[in-house]
Length: 424
Image (cartoon, rainbow, N blue to C red; front, side, top):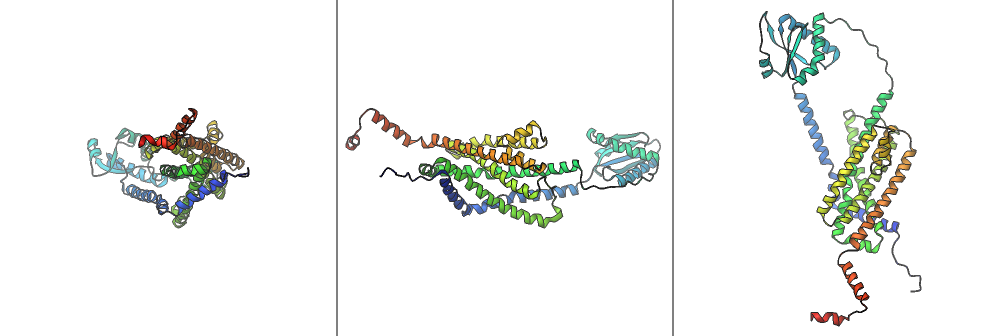
């Protein structure tokens, strides 16, 4: 009234905090959040059961064997040579089974031996140790060619003589083994980051579509800046996701400690485990905010769940391509493709997390996080603009405003009684 009237609207950050707190509390204390926490347990249980069944099948599977069809002396020499070599070379040699000890001038149907079901015969070795003949499927016998030649040569040479002992001198590590181990750690961290991002980022989209259908989002947009609504929802869903990851991480840590040596251990990353975990949280937040801001823009353009699924499918496929790009760039450190993956906002979190496992430098991560945060702000601003254009300036209210502006341009207005007269 006195010329210093305030609008009563909150600032963008204050309004975003209000929206984030509202959504976080509403989701965290809802009944569905408990089932949300149980969601990842079912794939883990299925994976463990499938792994145990597959391991059981591998244990009970019969190894393919080579049937030996030779004269008695040659068959004994070949089998003895194979057993002696297997003790020193390990399990790389196939098993030998004597199918038939031939007499002088006797023949044997090799096709019958391959078709028989009394043993798991994959190929038949005939002829003599000096001139062996291996009969069987092409792919199988080509893979066994070198091993059979070595066994036949040893059978021709006679009993296996003593081999010299090899002195072993161990080192803590080597450059090749260290690089291979860190690459495996980088790949595991990248895969975990991608799975968590794809599994959790969709909550932003579903929440926006639900409130858009209930007209809640329009009420919020009329009271506070649209950028604040989007920022609040993004950070609320991010906080809920971090709570879920904390619960899953705690359960996983307990299971990891309980399993002990049964779980394979990953080599230590270049920056160390504490810093890699911290960077993982930061890059998950950035990847979540980037993908969530895109999903918010999609939700502002879609009116129904079907439209959301149709529009979001290309984004999901592109996200898979981005992950493949980052995975390939991880194997090409210092190349142009790695630099592109680092600077491209959507692949940058995955590429930089993989780099943290392989390179101990920290200053590139500061620059990467700042660039990703700037991209999030730009995407949120673009999504808010799309929402204002497609939702807040459309519908019956907008049509009514257009009609009223048309009446004012014609220079006249009707009274209430005149406008109601035709309806009487």
